[in-house]
Image 1 (tube, rainbow, N blue to C red):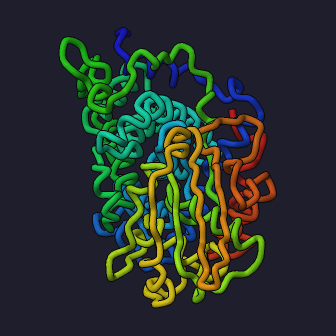
Image 2: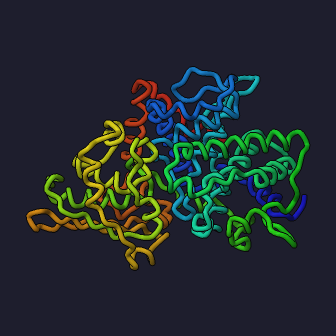
Image 3: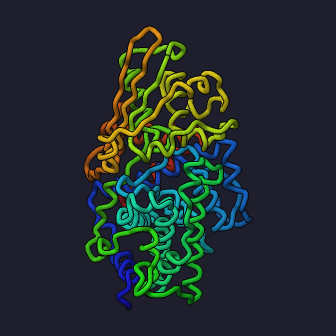
Length: 453
């Protein structure tokens, strides 16, 4: 085998086994799968789910809660899209990426074989491998990659997903190396500007990366290769230089699943950079109700990245436009007196919400800027017409990993999710599409302890 980074990553994927993971990490991986299935099921109830099927071609793969048969690549795009619609899917605090939309989608699309459908337990170890790889690369380039204009979910996810699918299929080392290298060569680079402009095509980018992973594996199995040093480069630049990554920090021989500790789950449907503002408002409301009609001014002090999502939605108030807008999230929380799925399901246009946009003034806070990306800090001060002032703060520990801690970040008004909180979230999402008994059976299959080898 070669000594290139793709080969060394393949060696990690090849040697890594379920028993190499601590019990806490094994449990977390089960929730990676369950949480994204719940997100997909709930997302499939939205009209915007149709966007995930625009590129669809017929085949045998079926998405959770759906009877349509899709080609594997089409299924990867659709699931990567639908599961991301609500912006309630998991994310890696140390890298700014959403590994689930690429890795879980690619693995799900790979379940169907000529002999039947692979059990869900078969996806768990490959998912761990894919998450570790994607998050390592994301961490090595964070936040430089995002600030340079590329969204890390697709650039890192295609590589992690290719390794995960290769692990699932039992590829030999050379073929697995080639699949990783081809994925690095072909990664879809999603321009960050599309996210900050709230483009309606943006939810597809994780699914497009999942499709790239499947194509990379297929090409590698056919004997094609991209090169030994596509990731790290040589006398000229490789992909990692393009992503502004610290190549020297990537040492696969020392990887043992530590990145899994930094993957967190969202308790509310919103962009991670809007969540601190929502949590600050929830902190204000915790002290007592507030009449939004009597508000004179809403002052937001936050970190620069959050202000990249600081514009109100466009006139149509399309779903993704709302969820990626901090002003909409703040205003919706104030009007509804809380924040959850009901805010998303409510009519897109609401004059009460839109009437608050002009009262919001957002500025960069130097202390909050210094805390990013370890903590996402936001302070909101609401001045009432009566002269009363109410203040809420959030210091969300999004970038601080914890193996044994809660499943969602500390530092929020919403209590960080424990095991019971994860179950409640799963059933709340899944049962919007499938009956409770079916949801319980799905979760039971994922948490079957004896099924993983």
